[in-house]
Image 1: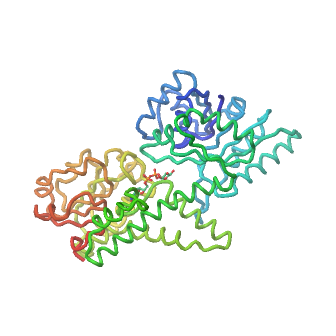
Image 2: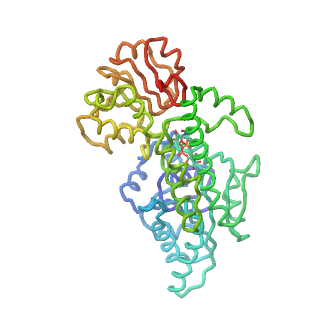
Image 3: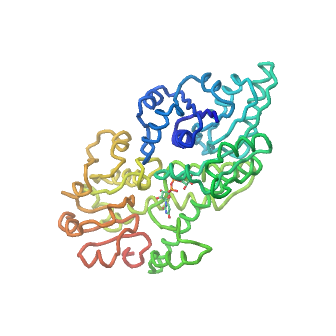
Length: 446
Ligand code: UDX
């Protein structure tokens, strides 16, 4: 089936490569010429395991091609996926400029019955705006071409985006058009071979499903972080509590890991956007504001421990080793990463940082450029040399089993601040290192 995807960001590119892989003929359009030229010669703009070879295979088989020519993109197919960005406005609501401008482009060029699929995360009601924009362009053109607008939100996680896309748990389709439903079933048939994954619903419910899912997950994390903070007050250990509650199948073990806050491109943006939308309907979604507030506080947590340990006046001149810059493992993405809040606070207090991350070093370099209080180093061991303490911000796998003797001999102040609860506080303390985890009762030395 011929498909055109507008926007080769994370979502658009991954979806395009996966569609091409199952045999669809996919044209990707983006206004960013540098990105498109890169993709034409196999340069992938993001880090995502397996993506490069899948794109290469798509290009070699001629089922995947890239262009900046909008008209070519519209002419290629009659099914159009919109996967452009919806960056937050100053007030936190999603900016629909790019989505609507793609809708306009499609309307200007389409000449047969079209299906316009919204894949970007957009506020409830955006489908109606897309429809209105297309109708008005068609009217200007003086033509009457039938079309449907479909909401089809993505549920990709960075780091496992390909697997999430190729083996989705569910495919949400929001439309009231039987024709659009039939076409979407055909497009997604290769992904529903063992079990029907498609849930067809009205457009607004589909749009809302995406926000409700992300806000639920963000709430789970903030809830656990709040429990972790309480555990500290009560001298309980949140890691034991986590296992205790996870064993209840109604709660489950996943997504209840306390830490130094969630980041990334989705949760912060979507929680904020849904809270904003609620406000526009005159409804105060108190739980969403609490989730946001808790997360903002949680991102300051490691710095608070550092202050508690040293006293705020003694941080100046310290050199701190930092493990993990990306907002989570297996990505180089630093958007809304807790590491950024920590770095700013440390610099403000006059500390120097030696930082290491397996993938996000270039990104950190791009964000911060050269500064005398940040040294990016090539290994997790290198940052320890000459450091006073270790800070762990992202739970990359190979931070889980460190050389504790090396830590003990390298860190002048013999202290670890662990924002991801990677170690057992007692064993670390037995080795002669002080240890601060999140919500670990007395070990946090309240
Ligand atoms: C998320 C959703 O999972 C995905 O369905 C949606 O489409 C986009 O947003 P992503 O942002 O890639 O995906 O990352 P995810 O793995 O969900 O983690 C988000 C953040 O939550 C990370 O900062 C992570 O460290 C944090 N987290 C996650 C916790 O602090 N505790 C947990 O138990 C789980």
